[in-house]
Length: 254
Image (cartoon, rainbow, N blue to C red):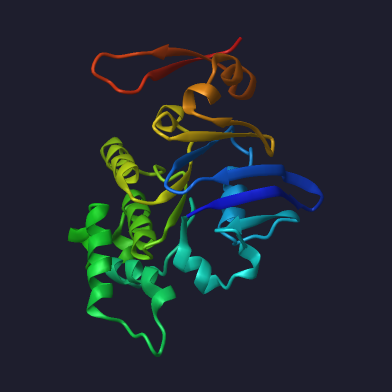
């Protein structure tokens, strides 16, 4: 599943939130979106998902302008989990996750046993199978976040867009989530604040004040000079025994 942002620019009431973004997401890769607060990560994800339309430029999904595709066709191809995703509080968890099958249902294609199996597998994948019958309003913030991810997985998308997916999650479920993402046979674009988590991505795209300032492998993007310039921090790179990835320790730049 290939996704391209071609000169994507977006503004609200004359204020530019993104300007001239050129970015290609390659099939099968895990791309991390990083940048300071307000750099445009969430805005870019909504544009990539086709929820908002660029003021200039275009987003291409498998070489087709996403704005010309129906919402059903887009939903069959990609799923977005936003930071502030909402769900009707009067339903059960299983019902909420079942909404992920909506793009595939029609009068000629009603609900089938296979849909139920897909929903059950999605719940199990995020460790929520035992909570399938729980009422939504009884869930914690972290449980709701995992249920929203299960709903996205129930869509069986080729492309998964995640906006700060570890918000509200304890460390155990953060680690489990990233292990799940790492092994998903999908193209994934994930916005992250935690730069140590970002080290596990195939590539990183760094946004700063609405502009794309660097794209590449994590070690190419997260250099000491760029961390100082963009985030205002010094970083020590630590290589721990038996750990495949380095760990960054941050100090405030003076």
